[in-house]
Length: 399
Image (cartoon, rainbow, N blue to C red; front, side, top):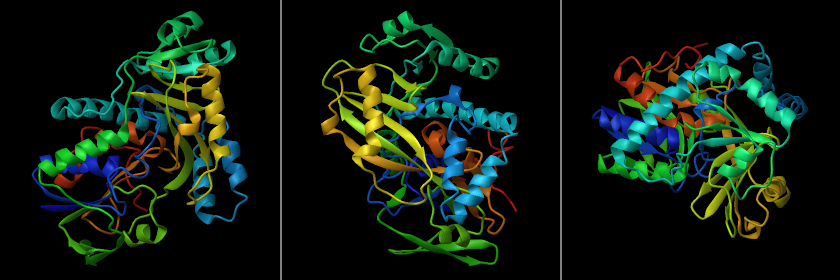
């Protein structure tokens, strides 16, 4: 069967890999000039199955409410749906953790099979707290994850110092030894090469314009480089054009949540673990002789671009913890639009209009952690197999 995958980020490339392993003829189409050029390009790098807490996180509610003052009907609908979920914490947690655990296992299998190198850090992830009260609150919050079987360990200031000698003093941390990190774009591009070796074609710099259907099936895509025929189609796009969503015949409540990223050369002793600074809401991930720093969650629509002032709070936070370690003037900066559903969980399955169009979308801020599992699930659905996990709470909305 010929399967056309729309999107060459983590979701699309992992899906293509599993489809190719199943023996399909696979074509991946993307408007960007290279694989992993948008949401999968310079993200935080952390693969954190143990941190599958549902949003809203602290402070997010205020950001959403403030943003609702803008004339943006798409945000209004998304925000209201998100706010309506505030009593659904347990249900969303269950779905999110189910997917994260499954995806973590699939990723490890995939890496063992392919030998892909992507600056992997397998020494666990630190969740840093700058004061004792915040550490205690974080440990109490983590009780639900410990009850679910995740290995989480509370560290005092001395224990943190032993793990990160270059770090300034903090109150403590939670260490998740089974969480890991790495360069998602490097992974995605290496996997794309493995896909090509299996016969997968990549058509890049190719704008997807609209599907052409006959009855309840799509037969081909109209693109900027001509028509691409297929027997089945997978939508693994990030932040989609509204018109394209409508033409694919499904309601997808996916909204871009903007964040900022800097990849900074190290000039002194820096961190050896990936970490989240829970007190300042930023993430860092060592990538060889560089440090990836990410943070921010803004609801500003589809606007791209950033200013030095957007990155400065991230720099200031890292500088207080690792004085003199990072060469900020040489940073490569970037802004990301995370494709987020109101539940902050992705959507899988076929839509209500076309029987041969499958979706693997809405991975949001944990796309790197969910990619391998999402790709395997989608390939299973295309093949008519029952996925490896229950998709309750993770399916495309049928209404």
